[in-house]
Length: 346
Length: 46
Image (cartoon, rainbow over all chains, first blue to last red; front, side, top):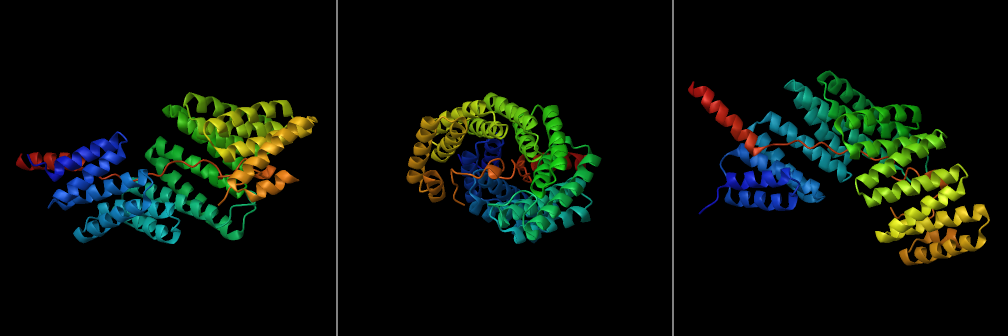
């Protein structure tokens, strides 16, 4: 019995909805092979294929299908479809670091949404715009500088990101869309953090946390606690930062996310180092070390050894300090980490 | 960018500049399209 393009596409859609993108891709590609004369169906297949590849982190393929969708929607004069294709293409170009092209797509998405008076579309385009400028700012200059102390080009991109997030918030508040507000507050908080506006960052992340709790979204809650911890560190409020990192750790354990659990232990170890409570710092760095070893994360293991060496030095435990310094050196040699190796030898 | 295990104390907390929220992708659903088409054809028959 022959299976129709529509049946294959519906099965692909069902699989993607449950998160099985790999299987979904197979069905959508089979649907294209069979073919359809209904161009709206073809547009939906291209779009969902693009999204499936996006979730699978195959951005070259995602780009290909979102481009097909854009060409098709333009050809048939489907404005709403073109807006959606532009939005998806913009997100994909952003991930690929092609920010100038991404901006063009976001603008098209926004222009169409305004023309057809689509408030939801406008809000989504503004959120995507914010994300593009945020990513652009981070991509220009990252290593070595402190938040709030980046070159003007970076600060300009980050300020633009904040403006777009604020414009988005004005609309999603009007629409009463709490989920969208939560996402925007989270990214606005990160933008203020990089701009060095740590009080504003805290205020945004507090809003994000509140909304995450409303939805029972523990992943978002965990992200908010971690981001709040980072902001409090830069405000010099180390005790408050530690409390937030502890909440992060608790949620990471509940969510069974070992990599995040390791990161939370590392942050707590560093925070207790700043508080000069070296015993507690050692306790958390050891927890980090054990997880890094379990996950076979040699960089993480090296960092834990480096931190443990420092904490033991502060306590005058010279044998222990030497043991971890040697272990750090050994890992640096193995991973080809030249700057770590030089520091370890000092 | 290669990561070093020896990180300056001022940089250990913001290696990624904060955890971002997920992107929002636009959805075009085949099933929703057909539901709308079906409703449209029923309405036009009335």
